[in-house]
Length: 127
Ligand SMILES: Nc1ncnc2c1ncn2[C@@H]1O[C@H](COP(=O)(O)OP(=O)(O)OP(=O)(O)O)[C@@H](O)[C@H]1O
Image 1: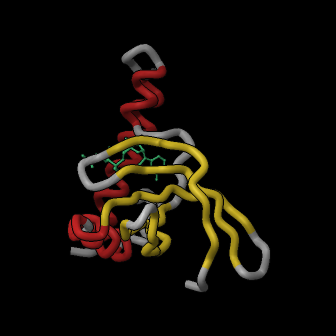
Image 2 (image 1 turned 90 degrees about the vertical axis):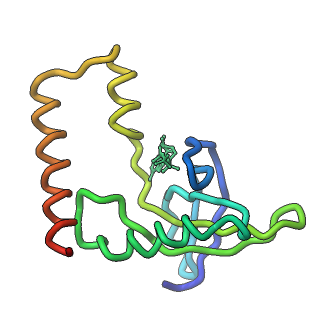
């Protein structure tokens, strides 16, 4: 991947292995796009590096969030490891269920179950 410039623009959430922000990125040719960036202090980044490797194995599974590379940055005197990911604007399935008052239409349940199973099948096909 060519070097890119990127800037965090909004906090999206926090998980076990890092803090996720929406970021605006731009390459040397001037194209720009949105992505999600999960960041953690470099000395605590072993799990996030592993996550980056795992995502790399599944780049051709469309149901798995795509890994887009990584960057190491210096912020406030501390080094951070940053994992770039495809931005999922709808958030997690949990977010969607909460926004829909704790339930989903049966058709949506079917749609998301099918997507999850397709993703799982793709993951299993890669061992
Ligand atoms: N690619 C993404 N696009 C949009 N939002 C995201 C993306 N990845 C994570 N988020 C948001 O950031 C939150 C934290 O994500 P993260 O992957 O760190 O943890 P998690 O999967 O929710 O939990 P855990 O790390 O415990 O498994 C998510 O709940 C979601 O709201």
